[in-house]
Length: 97
Image (cartoon, rainbow, N blue to C red; front, side, top):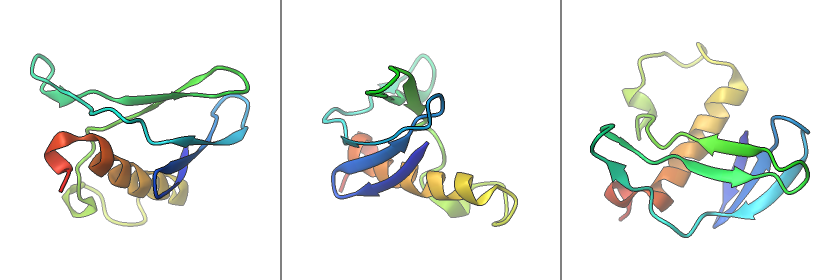
């Protein structure tokens, strides 16, 4: 789970071993894949157990575009989506300033 994104540093909590670790934002672009009509997901690997965390780069870029109202998702999920949206602005070419 993506817990925070400050500057170019992500804090991730591993879903398997629960270890929290920091890693840099990947210095690559999430490519658009026309055959799937989606962007590549970003993956990071836990340094403790080797589990791979996949971060979906295809959620709506703005929270107002989501078909739910605040409170329908667990708070942790809403927080994670907030940070994933920030990450999307670093790695998706169409969202970079």
